[in-house]
Image (cartoon, rainbow, N blue to C red):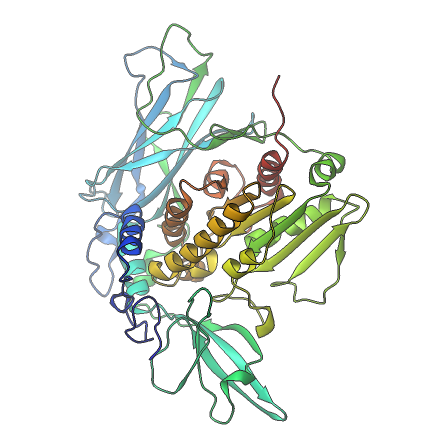
Length: 512
């Protein structure tokens, strides 16, 4: 029987124990390292039916801004800490960690914001740490995304119901047609069609039609979602009550930051963030300086004689749509593709600019896609010549959230190997990786695409490409630090800043 993932076992992903790690020692070490990167504190057992009494309650929880270390006033370059104490619905302090808490420091007037680093002390308290990067007012915002009890449920769903989002394909030959269920792994209750990719080894299966051959498969589309929560588990995912709710300050929630004190040497205990917003523009703290491409001529000049390949999900498709909307001379060539999945292509003949988008291969929760358009990113990269006039952008995360993390790890590993091959034959190729981002959460979005699921994949993605000659667009921090509401598809001001980063990598400007 064909392998689902890794070593041959069976192709029924009923639980994650069936996703065996590879037998290659090097690959096994790499995967263990990736699993270590997403280690999460132990979360409590959740009795059924669920009672909220002992679960984390943002309304009873508070945070306190700690005083300046050594006394005195706040200055640019200092590090601000806020101590967060979670309590349950009866007002009692929590005694263990594992909650998903996020924090940002911001000033709406200056359109300034930076993501905070949250440290879990494993006893119900957390510390949010922020670098002070601008003068003036700086306000702390702390949010409980998920209680530790909710994360217990999210973990269980992935282990026990990895196929809760399922897919279908239409098979047709002449006047005969049938539809069957498809997925990364399927219980072998019926004969299967094996569509595992021969080059990448990525698994995909469909139940075999009763009266048609496997090679008559026409398309791929999302079949549906099975919500199998236990009694009252849905109460752990209530928007405005215990999911993505702000925690109030005990005392003031803001500080006044004075200019940098040259007499005081800044001491930072924690790694600095990727960047921050100031006057609405993203300023990188690591990597290349980000320049503002505020008009079509500046963007077009940068992209002249360039080919931009965009691979991934709808959050990368946004970038294609943005470039089409802001560049009047970039004309989309109508390929008569589906508006969700593409492929898409736009050209500016006068400037010799070509921009292309192609979605990644299954799992893919889009409407109907012809099987001929199901292309794995690794295979696409292997077809590129590359070079100094080639920009490759990869963003793949959202559609993998319901599956065991090893499914995502294997996909990234195949892409990583293809990136290495591309950079080996064409070292001057620019490769940009887009990370995951935060989003608005209701019950369905949480069970299929929770920020906790996204955070796990975000960490794996970073660890996978660490050390390679690729550039990163930190969509997680950019969505967290911005004042706009979280959204699976960030609003235009955030997309504009992301594109500015890519263009700054594409066309670096000399300072001075």
